[in-house]
Image (cartoon, rainbow, N blue to C red; front, side, top):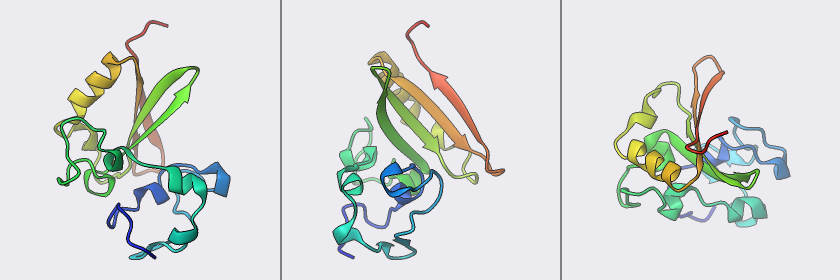
Length: 143
């Protein structure tokens, strides 16, 4: 494997579903190897090449890539953005049952407010120790 820009973070290999390679959400990709990362990094699918998490993009306001802040493997929060019904939806997934208050970390509250002020729908998801999850949908627009 060639060193990726992500360091040793591999959360994107587990949390999101990737229909193009039949990978369900919250399960490790079959190409992921512990302490190695993607075993086919040089030849990984285009969907994986194109994906850039919010940490890698430097999107989370108030954070820097030079800090441990929002890097998914350190913060225990994974952020996805997609479009649904013509609206931007941002999902913040607190994926570690051992860190149920991860979304309460400094910076996230203000960042969520900014995303809502910009007209986005924000969904917070906590993965619980039971294998179940808890979801809250935040939307400033009526209806």
